[in-house]
Length: 625
Image 1: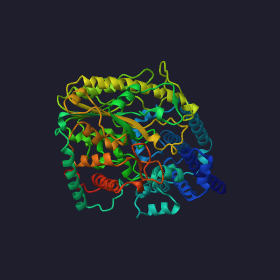
Image 2: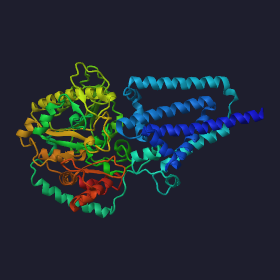
Image 3: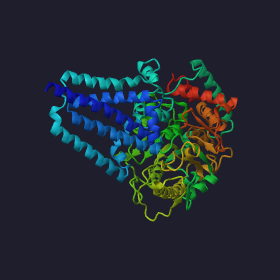
Image 4: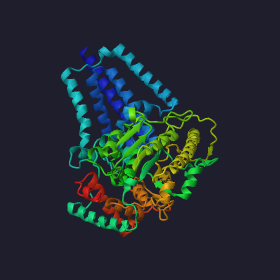
């Protein structure tokens, strides 16, 4: 009996070890979707990191065993969890070209909304596999469970503690002096780029390695004296700019930032041909207003990052490569972070979706935004308009615009309004009535072709409602300027190689529009003659202030210099680059080919960004005055 017991225990351990190897391989395959590449990772130069993944998976298996103390129930939990993890990682890679990260855990508060983004076919397939898995392990537990190994309490506590320790030590993975960092480095683990890390090290090590990240590397020469020198430099620059600006009180004007969810001209996407133009009104607006293309630091997602850059003027590509979401990883550590809303006495935010997505509830409070209307708010903060399009679950852009107009009319003077729409968010599997759009070309697979048609139809609704919105603003007798931009492309163009089309697949549309009253009373112009054809979200504040004929602070003088003299910048998917610089002809500019003036401006910009987000805030009070 004793020998038989040892044999069973040995078989259990072997099963757990083999399971860890299999799950590790599955996670790597979910990340790459390539059997050959996965095998090269496992059996090639990344074998050590694969073994490290397997070791952690085995320890996690033991930890769950310590909690449950029933082998087959433990196995059910283990396989169900990692199957869901693998599917979630695969979906995020498909739609956003990046792995699951710790900052994504905040999204679990809206699990119902996340599930709504899954296709019915995928839900059925995954559901059937989970049912078979769970059912099989329950059967085995009922029949053989009593023969399996059962731990004493002190052993269980050790196993649980070992699991917690093995995961917890990754909190120091970004500290070059820590033992964790040294072990990871010895295994060949690198974390210079999220996508590179996930593809070579596997998604789980990348997830654990990003539990804690440095906000930003300290730039060379950072000191209090240097920051005060920079402040003085841009105080002088502000005076020079302001000689040519007439308006000194921003409080008199209304500034509206509109982030149009997933809006980007599909006719610019390589190898895609639509049967008709889904954005004729906006195209005409762009031809007659300050407008151009915006370099997005995301594909298929990262909405809040574009919003963060637009509101603060800070650049994603200058943060640490491992930092993914400033809203969840930076703002909550700051005291009164700089943003455009602070330039107004009254401010409001509108987002016709859940307010806790990307931590917006607390972020907007930190930004000093006075009110935030979303689908979760009640009472006076309830959204006034909440209609959806036929066949759609998300609140329409028409309703979102109506809420913005309502907000404009609640204040006698000026105010700042930040509107983030939701209508064109994925998935694009709905069926619009009488959808006239069709597409051809190899830029999208046949599986996704209908999604492109649905996306184009949604864009056409946005096109119509946007023109109506601006017409309503033209009827209001006070100066109003609108900064309107798409945040990223939808992640549906699966026929194109993202790396080969790095620039065009990161370009969205933007325009800046001043209403009739602003144009007639010197509070705005029709079109800036020197507007950059290609810009970035961090360039919207200086562009808006210029269009509004508004004097600038030293900080906004710096942003003006950056916007006018430095190529548009974005966070690059290129694993060997810390930034993508693009000129107004949409051509990439090598960092080494930047002029001395451009390099000096970027150096100043990095110093200020570090000081405001990760440094000592030497410039905060002075640079806003």
